[in-house]
View 1 (cartoon, rainbow, N blue to C red):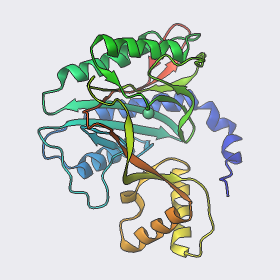
View 2 (view 1 turned 30 degrees about the vertical axis):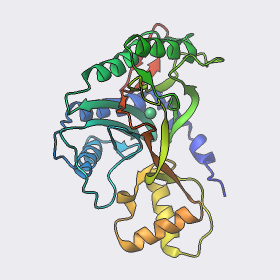
View 3 (view 1 turned 30 degrees about the horizontal axis):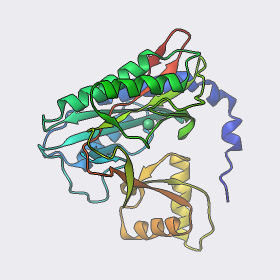
View 4 (view 1 turned 180 degrees about the horizontal axis):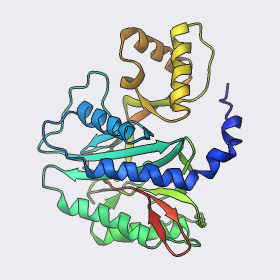
Length: 306
Ligand code: CO
């Protein structure tokens, strides 16, 4: 069964707040990111938990579990239940932060080089994002943006991950049209004043494969539909998740802390009510960086909201 979002879509008042609330979410996300310090020994659980509660303290909600993706792990990793993993002095740590207010999402990422060995790589990734944003304004297309990002990364001697893209953002939905490729794809979308998109080049070393593959592990989930089940715990859990998350992602640690809850969650995965997002890693084991902004397209430029 599909989820009926009709009353969400008809909620004109909520739709009118798109730019204001995304801006507010972006401010909270920026404050949280700027206060973040990561050092060897910090556990994934502490990093994710502290950021997610700080977001709440500041009057918003997490839009997706804080992503902590280390070295060749490129995206979709976060702290699991009882996760004891911690950051080491050899790591490059990508922190992807999502904040929402009433469904309106600011999505952005930053990379920390704890190892101190990947400065040039980080520089290239950061510059690719900055240069990309600098060419944006109403009337420019995602092809222009992709060309600028690709040109920057190549000129610095690095390689883009070719199967991860930026994306549009809608209320309660993180990955929507338009697709925002990090290369000059043909038939790009022409950006309009008022569009809000997320731009996120992922960069690795030139001798690496330059694409990501799915791992067996899944830490992040979202509701895909309401499928029938006789398991009352599972039904209760699904309703609870929908009330709090709608279609936004969550982690096992948010809803399935006890063995009974974990069984219920397994049932929801089995019957197809939940979608699982596998952890993504660079195929050849290359260290990857991610820098991401959410921007508002304006007449004469792009305003960074986060
Ligand atoms: Co994103």
